[in-house]
Length: 322
Image 1 (cartoon, one colour):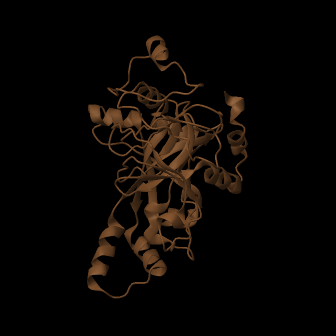
Image 2 (cartoon, helix red, strand yellow):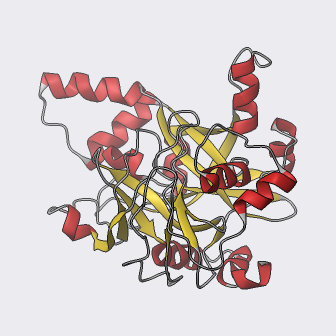
Image 3 (cartoon, helix red, strand yellow):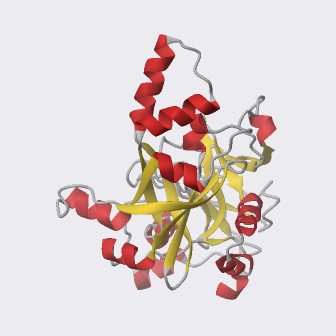
């Protein structure tokens, strides 16, 4: 997984990210605002640097969040995927297109997800749905049942990935998760796994990441793709509408973005945009190789509210957690 960190400071308004990210002073220098923990003091008292990141904020966020961020793999039932694809985007009979669709229907798909909520029995992970764009449009949105019919979804956490890379697990070990909610309009997908099943897979805690609540502080970005890589950047646009990015909105997207000048690799979509206080401020939609677009916290909150989960009451009252 790749971890991407960009530091910034500003107001905590979920609907107004404009101007929230200061210009980076240098590779190892950040413009600090009040409300930022003493990272150097914390590192001396509580931990050794977990990775060789030169930026102290990077080390802190990486150490704090790595248990909550996971890789998600979707293994397809190729015939069902092809049937759905042809229904949503009718096949024109072209032989090259036929071969392309057959190939892509057999490919495994990847995204990044993070733990957004838990209770005594369950754990929920949030990610994006647009890796399935071949299978929906504005007139034909996906449902959890359709996704479950076409794919077997599973997660890999950082702890089990470490065991695999060290040779303790000869094969990469994953655990099944289930789609429970989806909003194609806002590019959000919610997965569920029982707490008992997750504990059997990995005994290390996987705590939720909470939405941004503090009024002042330092922001950052974590975006897993390649395993534990670090990039630092700055915001180029605070609140961009989807119509500003793409002219023809065939998928019916209705979300807004914060635009950040960092790169994001394939499979990193769904990664959380983090504050220096380790709170979620957005979710990675994707990028063009130069800039990345993050779904705003306002859209995330609205979608969670529409899904009507009682546990999300705590997400709208995060100040009580600090």
